[in-house]
Structure formats: C-alpha cells, structure tokens
Length: 229
Image (cartoon, rainbow, N blue to C red; front, top):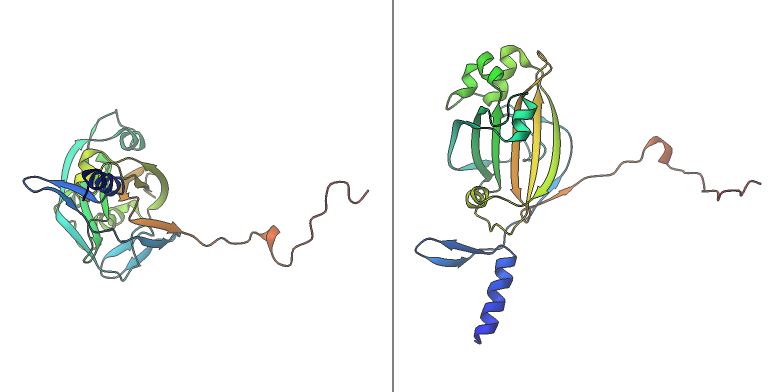
C-alpha cells in the first residue's frame, strides 16, 4: 500500500478520534464509539437502590460501572465553581471525581462534584470515601438542605489533556459539558456543583417539542397584513 494512502487513512482516523497513542505500544486504532441517544428531559427521578438519577445520565434501572477508583480531594476550584460558592478565585474546595459508563462500555462521562465548605461543615459525611446509601445528596438533605433544587446549563468545548486521558479520547474530539448547581432549601445558596464531561461522539440529545396554548390544533389560518382592509 502506498505510504500516502496510509498517511491519509491515519489522518482520517485521527480526525475521527479513533487513534490513541499508548506508551510502549505506539498508536492503536480504537473501535468506533457507541452513540447513546438520550431523550432529554428535566425530571430528576429516584432509584430506591441508588438514590437520585439525573436525566443526562441514564434510566433509573440501567446498570452503570465505575472506571478506576473514585477519589476525593480538596483542590483549587475553577472560577465557575468558586463564583457559585461566593469564594475567592482558586479557593480550595472538596471535589469528588469519578469516571463512569453504562455497564460493559468504555468511559462515557467524567463527573466532578464540588461541595461547598458550608455543605461539608453541615454534613461532614459527604467528605467520607463512601457517604452511605443515597450518596452525598441524601446526606445533604438529611442535614437540613432538602429539598435541594437544581439548575442545569450546557456548553460545547474542547477537552483538556487530563480529561482526554481519563475519557480515553483524542484531544481533537469536542466534549459536551453539563453543569448542575444544587441549591439548599435551608440557605437558598448553592451547596454543590456537578460538572459532567461527555465525549461529543458518544452522545446525542433528543427532546420532544410540545405545542403551546397558542399553537393548539386546530389552528387559525394566517392572515397576511392588511388582508382585512
């Protein structure tokens, strides 16, 4: 095979994020990723065995797995987190990090949950390696912050080097970032910020459009301006 053909094929695979460089093995070709179609909603559900389930993640009954070892650490917070918590830029905040996916699939999402210093003081168990059944959210609500209300935002961006490594993707693949801010019913202030990073080629979001009151069927015909004159 002509070397120019090989080079062109390599560049195309690299562009699609299917080339990964592994130390002492060189470049390997990855399997094309499975794209998950998620019907986008705004309803938070609850699984009796796991606790709260958010719409960007999975069905309540879908089994998921953790890649590597989840870990927690107090680290300098990014601006969007320190701003939500009304802290000085780069203030140190507890971060709980995990990489998860549907069972049997490669890494699907990198999840960083940032917990405010006030939240940790009022619910110390959220800083434990295992916060217990229902996770940190149940501990926060038991400490008086419930019912927590959430607001979510989306953006598309490029991954940084650490994110690409943890998600096993090329740095040329854009990612979907979702940010969920949980606000305490007790203080009316954010107590947790969860940032999910999902490879752009692994997911597509879908939603069902609904007719507003003015668009209910049957509709009136459109009258051009001045038609009634």
